[in-house]
Length: 134
Image 1: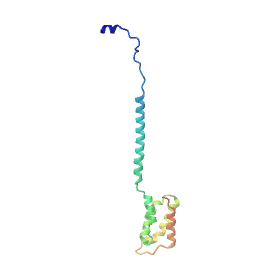
Image 2: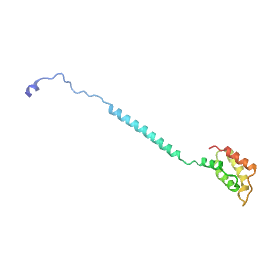
Image 3: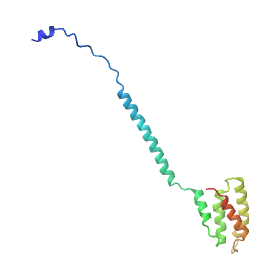
Image 4: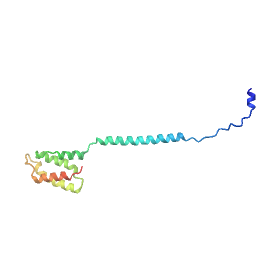
């Protein structure tokens, strides 16, 4: 019986045709794009989390100047010189103002006992604090 089937010619079966299939390439491109987007998101998230808790010297120095108690004149003079030096390089105007303020504070620094700040020095201190941009 197999002989008879082998002798019958088959005319309606066509040979295999090559089909160009690009779905694998589309899938790989989509996966690569998704990985790149994911990596960018992770990078910016890590950068944000690192900078969120970063210590800001300028902000801390400005806070110390703002909350400074001027009743203890000697400690205040030293603290103003220390914390104010952070901002002296902002502009030539800041540098000049800081040097003027420092000259006026010299009178209160190197003595055993000192009087309270006079109004002129207090005005210079407030003016310098007002010039600072944080």
